[in-house]
Amino acid sequence: MTAQGQTIRLTVAQAIVRYLMNQFIEIDGVETRICGGGFGIFGHGNVPCLGEALFPVQDEMPLYRGQNEQSMGFAAAAYAKYHLRKRFMFCTASAGPGTANLLTASALAHANRLPILMLCGDTFLTRLPDPVLQQLEHFGNPTLGLNDAFKAVTRYWDRITHPAQVIQSLPAALNTMLDPADCGPAFLGLPQDLQGWSYDYPVSFFDRRVHRIRRQAADAAEIAEAMALLAQAKRPMIIAGGGVQYSGAVAALTTFAETHAIPVVETIAGRANMVAEHALNIGPVGVTGSNSANTIAAEADVILAVGTRLQDFTTGSWTAFAKDAQIIGMNVGRHDATKHLSRPVIGDARESLRALSQALDEYRAPIAWTEHAKAERATWDSYVADNVAHGNRPNSYAQAIGVVNDLCDTRDRIVTAAGGLPAEVTANWRTRDIGTVDVEFGFSCMGYEIAGGWGARIAQTERESTADTIVFAGDGSYLLMNSDIYSSVLTQKKLIILVLDNGGFAVINKLQNNTGNESFNNLIKDCPTVPDPFAVDFEAHARSMGADAVTVANPTELGEAFKRAKASDKTSVIVMKVDAYEGWTNEGHTWWEVGTAEVSENANVREKHAEWEAERVKQRQGM
Image (tube, rainbow, N blue to C red; front, side):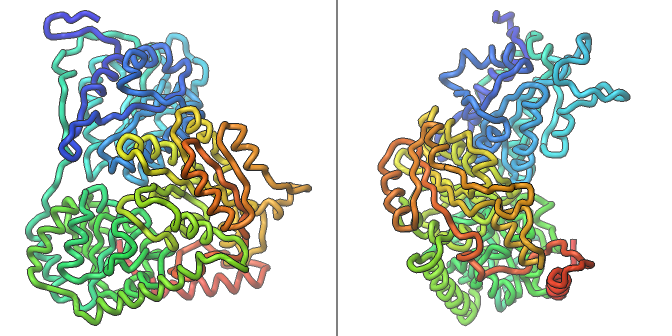
């Protein structure tokens, strides 16, 4: 590569890598490269050119070799979540099925508003060799290909069709990923021939640049409207979502709640906005919530929803709140701030909370209301203490959660997703420090657990040397995606993985039974196509991938195994069977809208349909 005046001749792939190498962000006063590296599986669509460009910078921009493109995307999402969307990883995949495998991960990042950059192979621009290996042909539209499928699951999508296009497209993709309101995955389709084409790029395009996350101030009129609503509230409540952490607004939220004596409930994404012991933390809200949070949610007259997209598990499909309750939507994103006729406060959570607190002046919620909320939380804490206790009862998720909760360190990070564990962790986990819980329920994606744990561990070891990453996975998710046990061992990124085996998809079996249906095709023993069910030897399987592994019989043994895993510097897998029917957290649930059969020969199905529909009267109507 030779500099020619104020230009430098590079291939498209080299230009992309050089640009990423020179983009920095200021975090806590320290300038750090925004892109922490990448996850890659090479193929004919990316190895000759992008691989060539990445090789010289491997020490500064590490490329982690994935085992599966989908799990690479999950790991990248978890990495971004740990860094509160201030850093991201790229994923590179070959043209065809490798790229197709990233679709689910892109959807997860899109639903969770997380930045990942996908650099994926594409068909040849010249079309001279068409049809090429793994190309999908659309007879009437040769421009349409597999990569167009990503348009539905990305915030920014582009196909590079000329080397100069990089000068516009790369900054646009980066700015989207860093935008608090539009944050999400970005996709760049890189035709295989174009990746190696060269161009005289301006040297200034590769200048070192430091970025900062924008803090949008809320409109004064919106603050005034929100103040007027809250100032007359007799039973106010705050819903704290994941956006509180992304904004760096945890301290502002706590100060706001304490100054105005307003109870706080957390969403699934907002778990660990407050420690469990804080007097105003009334618990998780919604379908997988707590009796305490849901009780005050149903009674609140004004609800301040901060940094939440108000998904159905938070709102109980919009039955969790009184129909006449007023909602203030405080969110950096207009779409989320205006849901269900909320009075919007569109702006950065930290700055908006400070402005609203100043406007409220000396307002404090009535003492009786705040004390009522605290009493409800105390009652819920007693329930959880009994729920996680073990002794003469079947093994359960809750018991395993309780054991780990008691033994883990303050800064250990908990990762889980999909199945029954998100509900059990959300309801039973007692937060020991801020920002230590990652329950992926934006897309509720099985397979995220171990892959996400690996990505979170990579991020964690960049900042916290003593904390561990702890993964809770069911047997169903383990069987779906487990190869990053091997990844964690190869890269020496230690995980502690608890595999809680209930013999299949037990939580969906529970839903099946709760809607009046007979068990069918969820638990392995209930699959009519399985003549001879048998248990998987998860311990042996994990050992085959290089991890330490042990099977335990009960929570007491689990505790001893967990202590050994904490003391080890190697990935450990702990397997325990749990009951598929007993030990579920049955308290704390709001109604959840599920499609039930209106007509059925099964009387139980008809009865449950009627029961389900009877609860619909609580449902709010709105946008």
